[in-house]
Length: 166
View (cartoon, rainbow, N blue to C red):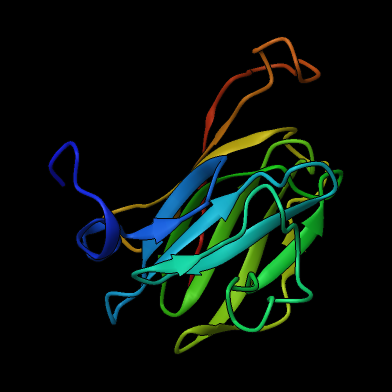
């Protein structure tokens, strides 16, 4: 996008509006883009990013009134305590979200552009999880983030973990 582009040309060049605190981006097998996002105060989110959509920050947090379709609701929300989502990876139609404050790995089944019920894995086992990345063999690589002054340091921190995504 060129500096100074305004109006309709700006909107056409823009991937999405009013998203903030994005920590992880991942594409599914159909090329759809998903993002993990820190919320404003209470709720963290997973959004499907679509061209020209408005995700409402800072006016909208979580699901609710879309102001007649002006705003786009997230696919998944959690309290900040449960998530503070960071890295995200998608393998075999499942989104994997590393949670910092939540100290767990969230798995979210994907069906097209929609999300099923999230399930917590590795809860309170390794501390703060920062990164989720699909490994060449289809498993996941996860990283911990406990030595950054915000986590409880454990023996062997910080580390790279292998999680069987299949």
